[in-house]
Every structure is written in C-alpha cells, then in structure tokens.
Image (tube, rainbow, N blue to C red):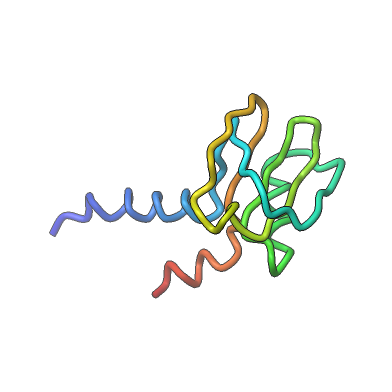
Length: 99
C-alpha cells in the first residue's frame, strides 16, 4: 500500500503545533515580555518553558511577548507587521501526535 498521503499530514501537524507565522502579530492576553531575545525560535523556547504560555509574539527589536491564549480564545487576528513572528507553544506536541 502507498504511504504517500502520510507525510504531509505529519508535517502539517508539526507546523500547527510549534510552528512560526512570519510578519504576524497575535494580539492580546500577554503574561509578560522578555527583552533581548535573539530570534523567533528563542521566543518559542521561552514560551515552552512557561506552563501557562499558549502562544507568543516576537518583534524585530528582539522583544518576546508570552501569552496565555489567543485574544478571546479564538484564532488570532493576523495583524501584519514586517519583521514580527508569532506562534503556538510546541510544548506537548509530541504527546498529542502519539494518540
């Protein structure tokens, strides 16, 4: 049997959980910010270390905003901002993919 359809589903799951949206700001529900964060990947790692962090936004001046959830618990309003990056915490991704 062909397994051609399996890989794209796995890649999509990884992108949704712990992925990065470039030039996008997720508004609202900030826990706190961290200055001097060098990259979006480092911001994501900061979020993954915080139990309550569900998503994050990194601004090109190297500030990382850690957030508890999307504003109003909905999919974030994608406010475009050149040089920004946002994403969901990747914490727990591997556990949810094994189910």
